[in-house]
Image 1 (cartoon, one colour):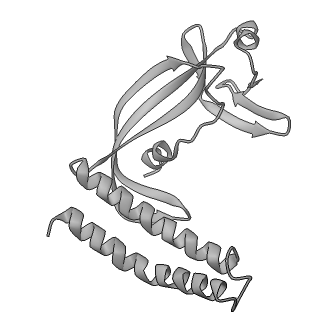
Image 2: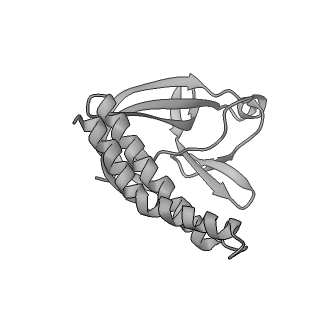
Length: 178
């Protein structure tokens, strides 16, 4: 039996009791034994557990197919002044999002490029590609990666029509806080 087949068998074994619970709920609902059972807290918890198990095995299978590692990409929205990065720290405030500059000042997020131009800064996106491993551990919905390496970092202009002012740098956080 190959590793992929073993992972699929393990997935089915892990899902079996939860799928049985879901099938029992459906049977009782359609037999009119309990009309409040679907969509309730117990049903939501079981569905979340099923999703968590599927996510775990999807990552393990993807890792196996990629030769023992995962490839992940994270985007970081940054401010540049005269070609030098002045901030990669995007925060949420009482009146919206803002960048904290390295000198301690801040610049509010604007909807138009022209507003940033008036402030003498430009918005760019750092695209970081990582190579990492998943060993089957998740914590409070977060996937725990190990053996994280930066594969490449590229810079591109921020597209105000499609990009959003949000940073989700979980893998970068894990790398910097070993």
